[in-house]
Length: 582
Image 1 (cartoon, one colour):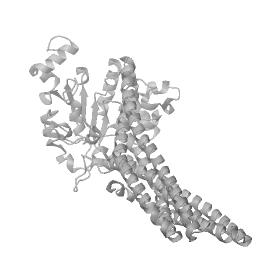
Image 2 (spheres, helix red, strand yellow):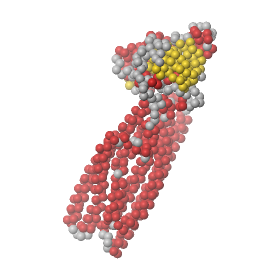
Image 3 (cartoon, one colour):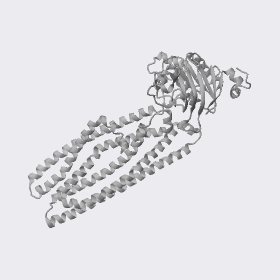
Image 4 (spheres, one colour):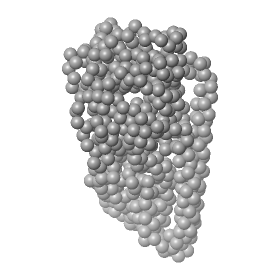
């Protein structure tokens, strides 16, 4: 209940509609409770007394109540739907915005499939809770309470006879409701697993086909699907058992009423036919809402499980946050970037540090190349500059200011990044290039594309800059996507430029052209170039060789050829034997 109550804040903007919905529902309940009493009146005062006027008057009264009941019920449904959908919309938006605030470390723990299920399925379960609660959540208990009161008012002795049956029925419902909660939580977890497998396969479908692993992935999905189905069947089986039990209890109650009430009517004459009929109706409006409460209990059980999972996202604290005294980074144009004894390991683990003891200075306007084998920590080191992660040891300074004391939006406004994995969004090529600067002119977009050696191939596309980029950029080659990503970074006019192996998907000739264009663009900017090709780093002002998370060597190309065995080995393996080349 605590998990659900934390989400009540999403109901506040719609409290007037919620109250109006409950008022209409209360009126509907009152009118529903009046019908059995009016039926009693027709039987006892009309039919048995042969009074046609009572029958006619009661008929028109019941007809009017039925019309009002229908109008109020429609109004209740309308407002409850508006409230439920409004809560769901706001909840989805809150989850989405929260995800946008997450640091990379948060995404390491909360997987894509899990977040997708929580934004779509779990928010839908919470929405259904609010919506159904405004319809049957209040109607059922009001009908039960009203019916019980009127049962005692109609025939007190019969009501006392029914009381044990009602208590037993309520206990059965409570037991089933307690059992349902853990089942719904497990069902949501199974759905998480199913969506994770699905998301991985859609994202990696090319790898699956390339390695002929469709059967293996089909088995994985089948297992996850089977687990989810088995849990759904278990829930459905419990619900299918409960409904016949409640129907049986209602039928037993009707039999007891007819038997006991008939005997009282015949022997004692203290019960009329109309009273017995009204009592049976009130008994039905007591037990039937119990069945509705079972469905509501299931919805609550599912909602409690989903609310806990939604709150896990909403309550998650981004690992990287602005300090209370965070400042705006001044626009110096040529910032100095300093790493002071920086260390890092993922998820707070003290085992297997990725980086340790990194001390490095990039002077204003200097081009620093980061070279090393795959897995040496090059990309991780670059992810620390824009604060995608915070270092677990040491600090990083920009113009003498610890980046943890700089506002993140201000810091990122000074940094242009071309990531190792190129991500393009659905939209036009032009939209993707000016993603970081939506207000840029067409002239600026073209200039950035030319600098990234992308202009010529863009013009060759069917619609040029207006060509639509399909999902994940599948209608473009890897090299084309990388060049668009480079243009996107250049258009932001960053004072710090990070190229994370950004020419790995282009041929040597195109790489040479891009490097030539970047030579001019990097003037006046502090640049970091992560590369595995040694040809990419030859013109760097400083080359840093990373090995096993540490700086193994540092210097210019010429200096490293003379002093670093690791660099000599890389050079010889890529550009030829010998170590005296330049």
